[in-house]
Image 1 (spheres, rainbow, N blue to C red):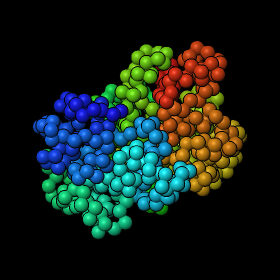
Image 2: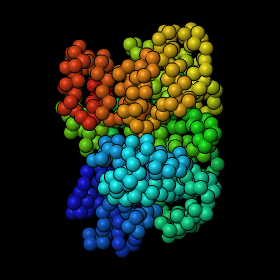
Image 3: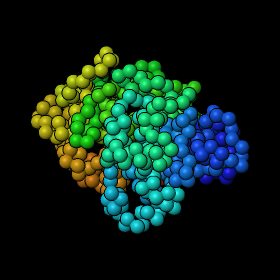
Image 4: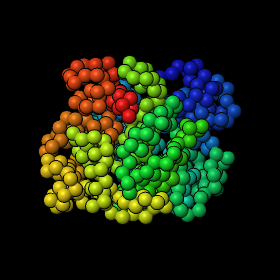
Amino acid sequence: MTLHDDAAYRALTTHDARFDGRLFVGVTSTGIYCRPVCRVRTPRRENCRFFPNAAQAESNGFRPCLRCRPELAPGLSLTDSSQVLAQQAALMLESAAHEGLDPPLPAVAARLGVTDRHLRRIFAQAHGVTPIDYLTTQRLLLAKRLLTDTVLPVTQVALASGFASLRRFNAAFVERYRMSPSALRRDRGEAAPPPAPAGPTSLRLAYRPPYDIDGVVRFFANRAIAGVEAVDGLALRRTLAVEHRAQALTGWVEARFVPARHEVQLVIAPALLPALGAVVQRMRQCLDLDADPAQIDPVLAAVPGALREGIRLPGAADAFESAVRVILGQQVTVAAARTLTRRLVERFGMPVETPFAGLDRLFPSARIVAEADPEVIGKLGIVRQRVRALQALAAAVAEGRIELHRAAPLQPTLEALQALPGIGDWSAQLIAMRALAWPDAWPATDIGILNALGTRDARLAAQQSEAWRPWRAYAVMKLWLNLE
């Protein structure tokens, strides 16, 4: 979505949240860049420069506003870029920034099947900056969020943001933002609350309206697994395990919708703070906070069923868990799959402490499932073919042969999944939909889709779905919601 400057200025003057994360405004008189929803006094038109992403604003010498906080803006979904390859690279770099990793650019290019030089060229064409500048912006914005919203020491903030040393972090921060990290903490401004006491950390996650909160909450409530997750009003709570820098961290998260502010209030257990960036990224994907309804809703209007604005694609806080639940859902109802998953958790899930009654189990890790006795899994009521599929998937994930996250290369991952026993196209498409956040996934033989379309002909349904590209996964959600 590209706006001419006059249209961009109108979005700024009206504080239009639909353009949040898609438009940033640099003000030449102050040297600061803002989100369109910023509530400071609107700058004069001649003092405004408009950018499609934060990295471009920073590469042009602007520093982020302390009031509207550009690091809180929604991100981009997988098909937002006209060059999907460049967007895939951006997702890999964002993932690296949040995981605290430092991937060499040639390795990113190799994973995408292109040369380093070609990647640099198409990345600059699509995003207006070099990959290194893009990665640096993601890391600094993550660091700014951690400095503002947590009480982590500056050294830990530097490491959690992916900087190899405190010296390099301080130098990059001062160069871009014209203040030291410690100075930002001393002068937080009106937009940032004082540091919270030691304990759970609360963060704000923005989304673009409209958002079908009722549909998302109902989806998770109908599939909630006792011990692992629960829904209470507008709040979703769950246990979570994260591998961070070769360390296993366990804890819990709570995500509560705040419709009046177009935000989700995310509360994270203290034990997960070292991986805070990764947890935030997982929850943004889980709740599909980076979707753009302005692109999706017009396409979904042609999908049969009542009009629903702001349909989202519920994703995965734990991608392996989502994949397991897809396998357990083969040829059974949602309720039956939920029962089988609960039994798996009760037998193999590790205990974890949370402040919420009944939320006390972690979903079993890939390694635990891979090494389990298949006879024991079978006694849970899981048929032998599903046991083989579960353990083949678990072994592939535990050994790193298959990666399940939205930055994973789509086609090679789909092929690797379907090479496993007991995983066909239906399962691979649903895993792509929920674990890989692929917006055009289409499980052609899904009985719910066929029922909603009033047919038993999967080929006919697939032909009808062609009109809904590249948002067919969202069409699936609309069709499912019509049946629930």
